[in-house]
Length: 404
Image (cartoon, rainbow, N blue to C red):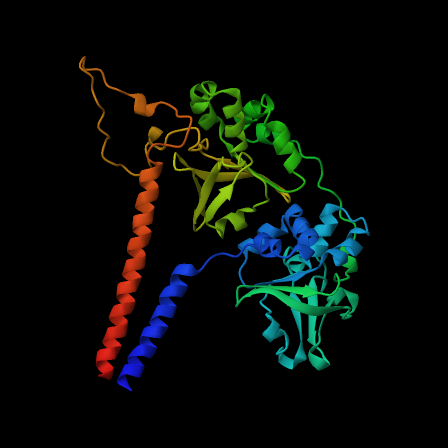
């Protein structure tokens, strides 16, 4: 009996340890990539940037439509903006796995969708009626369509309990409000907006660069720009002039990300983001780190803070930052001092007594300290895991001895 008790405790301890080290964020694009019959739906989740919305949320249900169902929707020739509204109606901000679908309280419920959560839906539009019918059948219908259940549950594609559920439904949900023509975003003059609000120096660099078309092409699909202040750019100009034309373009593209991120979204999300400069093996990413109302952008070379908003007009938003973002692909990590005050680095002297300052020169590749930083992070991570392991073992044996 005592041996059985100990074995049971050890079993559950291992489960806790395993779950603490394997939790990962979901990725709807990767989930659907394993199901070719949903390739069209997967494609338009990316085009409308709804994939990013799904990935950043927790406790969510995606009502997926197969290629045949998507074709019936595409035959309506909706604009991308309108199609985004329709597809956002198929993303429920609650978790419904296959089991929960058949155990709905009172047999029916109204669930809010991303379409409703954006504020674009009027009245009850944006709510989805989910009803457990007789014979194990489950129906879905847009509430602004009189709650008519014209689409039905087919199968579960993938589920991670209480995190994300991807379910196939028989056909797209019909909603007059979601399918109403949506005007395209008004023409936005990026250069003009920057020039008038304290970012003229950066705007002048962008105007004279081949990077400008990339910014303009991404506005309609979603774009977030981080624009350094005039004083920050003016201080950086000497280094900028030493870059090749190709590297100048990469540096400017590094200040934009190809998705709309409101300030509230940035404040609720920590993690690595790709930029307009990201391509293939060239990562050109940085980390968004928020602390309450403060949002910082960390590149490993420099840390910049958002100090203001130039414009926020979905799908385009531009922020003012207090420093030029320096990617580690172009500058050494040790080139600028970190925020804290570390001990001064020792510089080698040659026989003539001259100080070797080569460590301060720009580099073509990643910084020399990257490998050390990565190793330290790995060591810290392993140390944390070891700590969890010791705590669980201590807890297990303590209970075991009490049982004995």
